Length: 165
Image 1 (tube, one colour):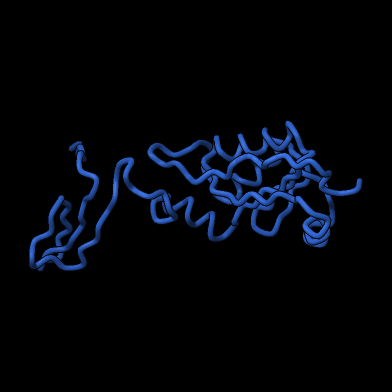
Image 2 (image 1 turned 45 degrees about the vertical axis):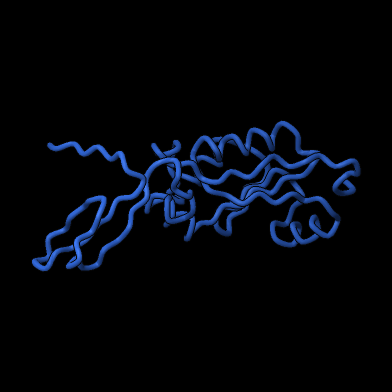
C-alpha cells in the first residue's frame, strides 16, 4: 500500500484524456475536470472542508443549540459535547422575551439548553440521549482528524434575566 505525504497547501485533481485520475500541485494544460483541493491550516473551514458524512448530516439534520443566560453549567456541558464530537452547529441565545416566545412556539417549552437535531427538539441536557440522536443523524462520535468546525462562542451573560419563569 502506498503512502502519500502532502506538504503543499493546494492539491489539484484532474482527469487526463484517457480518463485516468491524477493528483499534483500543478495541472497540465490538457487536464480535464481539474479541481482544486485545499489542505493545511490555511484552508478555510467552511462546509466544503467538512467530510462528506458531516456535510450530509448537516444538510439533512442541521443542529441548533438554544441557550439562555441563566442556563449555566448545563449549557457549557452541551456546547462541550457538540465540540468534542465535531458537530457543526448554530447557537441561539434566548436573550429577549420575544426570543423565548418564538422558541416556545417552536419547541413547546422554555427549557434550556435545548438541542434541535433536524426538527427534533431535545429538551434539557442529557448526554446519552443527545449522543444517541446525533448518532442516528450521522454525526461523528469524535472530531474527525484534520477538521475544526466553526464553534460558536459562549453566550455572553446579560445583566437582566432572559425571561420570567
